[in-house]
Length: 79
Length: 239
Image (cartoon, rainbow over all chains, first blue to last red; front, side, top):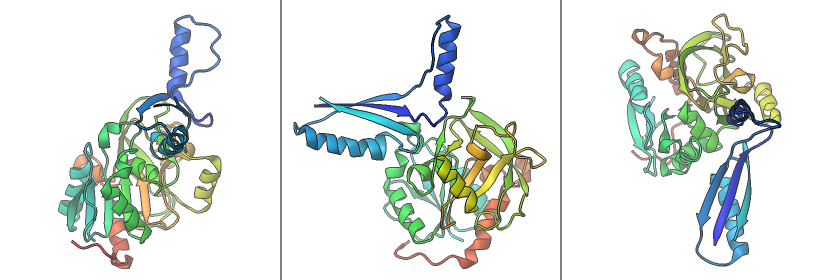
């Protein structure tokens, strides 16, 4: 099974990377960009097939290591 | 005052810290390898600057789980002194020994420069040798030094007098122009509730000898020595 995790900066946190990317897109003459935020994508390949159990374990991994809950939020999908 | 400096793969300010503590201040100082489970006989732990684990995932995120950091957490729980400098501050926040987090500098640039910080309180083992509102000239060198915490935590830190140093201009004014990285409330360093753990982004170990441009940083390290008389002997740490 594979865990797909997206880690994004919280909306209350300044994201200067996102702002810079937005500026760069606009300087490429892209119009109509309201906002850009830059995050991380993490893929974890897992052994075992107890999806519920894996979700619980990965959720803890996301909370404890893969993201910093002070400044980031994450979404977790296991397939 | 016995100092122990943790070395992680990627730490690069450990030797500067050792030089100042051992050679300039003449204190018994040793290195602690990140894989060591015990700290040995140490009064104050130094978590030094650098790029531990290459800043992989997030700065300080991986160092936090090392055996040595587990021992540092116990040491801190027992009231032992801990000072985290730059990457050390990042590691202490990731380890939840300090609240908040350090994020990417507002201007996205790595800033390597002398800055001014103002001492906000002398009520700590890290600033007791300073004067209230004293201005210290100390270098910073970081790309992710912008202090962030939720509004309620910032208010709590201010209420509890736990912001020990703040970025200011050379006259001691806390202004946005004097903020090198976008830290909330120009916060340059904070301590924990027990006031025994301190993290700061500037490098006092790089400002402890006049030859290097400033010896203002020495006051922070000398504060620790001053506090030494009142530090409890550590339990269960055999050299």
